[in-house]
Image 1 (cartoon, rainbow, N blue to C red):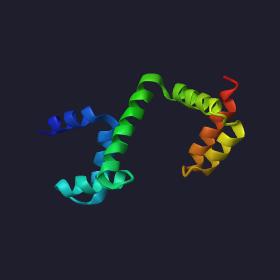
Image 2: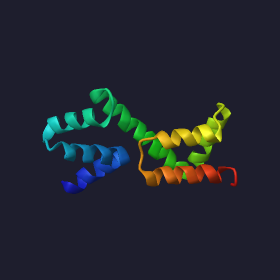
Image 3: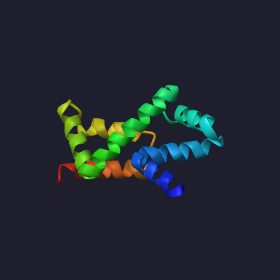
Length: 116
């Protein structure tokens, strides 16, 4: 029974893990846990939670196929093509609500972008 559950959850990949952790964090059981978890995951309640999981799945699929560095470079190129400058991108990164460690990593990748 446990193996079947693991196989089904693994089929969902990273979104399945996100949902599992969110369900665990609710402290509830059954349908109430799933409902509360989905509502907590994304903006806009349950529908937003489902959309967030779908988006997470698409992002993880892309990362698995192309790698983080390739995707990062493509996003930076796209931002430049839309008229962003290095300073405007740097400013946006500084304003993000992410850990200082992740900010430093993003800024370092931006610094190295033109060197690659």
